[in-house]
Each structure stands twice: as C-alpha cells, then as structure tokens.
Amino acid sequence: SQKIEQNSEALNIQEGKTATLTCNYTNYSPAYLQWYRQDPGRGPVFLLLIRENEKEKRKERLKVTFDTTLKQSLFHITASQPADSATYLCAQRGSSYKLIFGSGTRLLVRP
Amino acid sequence: DGGITQSPKYLFRKEGQNVTLSCEQNLNHDAMYWYRQDPGQGLRLIYYSQIVNDFQKGDIAEGYSVSREKKESFPLTVTSAQKNPTAFYLCASSPWDREKKLFFGSGTQLSVL
Image (cartoon, rainbow over all chains, first blue to last red; front, side, top):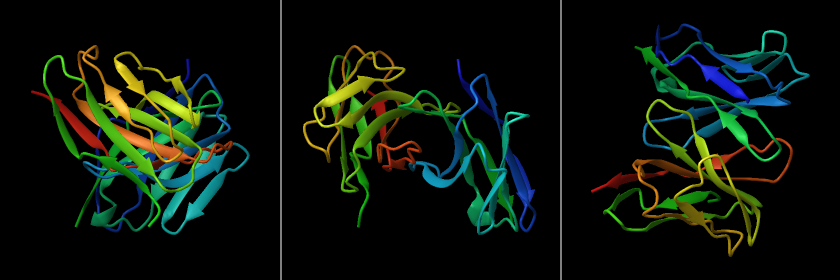
C-alpha cells in the first residue's frame, strides 16, 4: 500500500536560516506531490504542487524539489521567520480519488 | 469571500448520541471530502463526494454517514456506532480534476462527554 512519511520530530531553527523538511514515499510513484501548511486548530492551507516531471518549484521564499529516484521531496523555506512556525504536511496522489497525507513536521523558528 | 465553512468549531457528544457536523462551500467545487485528524497522525479520509447525490466511503467510514443533496453542502453525521469519535474533523473541497488541490475549512473539534 502507498505510504508517505515525514519526520515526526519537530524542526527547531534560528530566524534567518533555511528550514528543510523531508517527505519520503514508498511503493507507488506519484504523479505529483503537494505541500500544505497547518496552524494549530486550523485547517491546512495549500502551498505548492510539484509534478513528477519537475525537479524544482519555487514560490517566493519557498522551494520544493522532487527526486523520483530517491522517492523523496524536500521543502525549503529560506530566510525563515517566526511567522513560518507551523506544521507542514506533504500529500501524494494515491488512487484517482484521494490524496494520502503524511503526519506532518512541526517547524519552530526562534527569533 | 469564497471559502469553505465548518460549524460548530467545538462539539460535545454524549454516549449513544448522533451528532452532525456542517460543511458549506461557495467555491463552486464539484468534490467535497471529510477527513479525521488525530494528534500526531496524518489526515485520514472518511467520505468523499464527486457530485451531488453521490458519495463514496474512504478509509475509515465505519460509524459515520454523509449526504450530498446540494453542491454547496456536505454534512457529516458521527453516529453512536463510532466508539472513538474524539478527533479534529476537517472538511475540504476541490475541483474534480487531476491535481485536486484541496481547500480546507477551519475544522470541528469533537469531544465525548
């Protein structure tokens, strides 16, 4: 069955540094991966989508890479700010109707 | 403003009681979904609907029921058969296309009294 794994340990970094979060998937090779941000007590918000034929996608301070050989996506936030502190979820397309979500990685950016 | 609205924000259920969570969207999306989120776990799909008057079970449908009488509305009923209902419930909508970017509501926290 399809699985998607994110580091369950929180990532704690200093403001201004680059945060890098990892998403690994097994078995099924997804057509794309999505990344969402979730704040406590709120619903996730879509950030970026990267397709299998794309190596890298950028949006402002965010960058996502997709390595189908390693079966891994990396999510980077450059020049991180305390306001970036949240849980970040990755999701892959499984069968045609649904997304499979990872459990998320909590990011804490210290001022 | 376009968006997806869930209510109530907090809900308490007594033993043997059915409760209904509301979800409304004005994004004109065809597809709607219900997810359950437990602490430290990923989102798990309960039910989804591609079109009015049609819906399909997700991975954890037992103890839940839904209806889709209008495109804008997709209420979820947590029945007394659901023995462990305490969780954060998220409703989402998306266009029914290949990429399915989800738009989520703000969630309902359900607890058992």
